[in-house]
Amino acid sequence: MKSSSTKSPLRWSLLTNHGHVLAYVAGHPDARLRDIAESVGITERTAAQMVNDLEEAGHLTKTRDGRRNRYEIDGRLTIQASRLSTMPIAQVLGLLLAALEQQPFT
Image 1 (tube, one colour):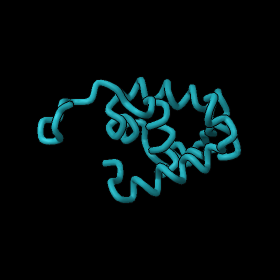
Image 2 (cartoon, one colour):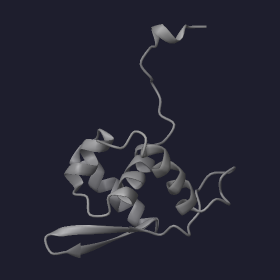
Image 3 (cartoon, helix red, strand yellow):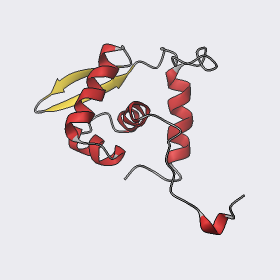
């Protein structure tokens, strides 16, 4: 077992990039794709594709607000995973955003 003083870089993530995008948008509904991409550590093109994926799955809606997009999360949907399928997205995002108040996205 390694000691905490010799940490190696993580090779995996607890959340997928789609999860990170959804969490970022939940806290920043008027974010630009550039902001989303920078926060998650992905390209703008990948961020756009993930936003489209989340929109197609019904997790968020995107509306134009002048020259910008505004995102709204449908918190009633549940997570598509076996153990968490009864937990609404809003509840999960609430937990994530509360935790991130300690260490917010940059």
